Length: 125
Image: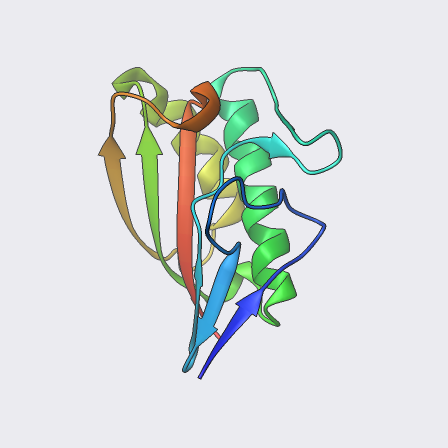
């Protein structure tokens, strides 16, 4: 049975989707961009600043599901520029320093609201 995960500590969905869905022993998050939950606007800044906000958003959604970032088993990172890989990776490493999850990084033409980075995650409950 699936359970919809929702929290005010992360941005509300900006379309017809859920922040996350728990199913079986896993939680699957929607992609997060660097929207500040307080202002409900994309933070402007470089990819490192946006990555930090994205991971804080993911952390809040995953926490609302009843688990934590250390339970993340896989992420997908979407970047709009190849040169942003290194600064994104430096911030990402601070959130997943011990036993990091599997990861795919994809380069795309654009992201919602002009974001530089988007990340989704799958975590074990």
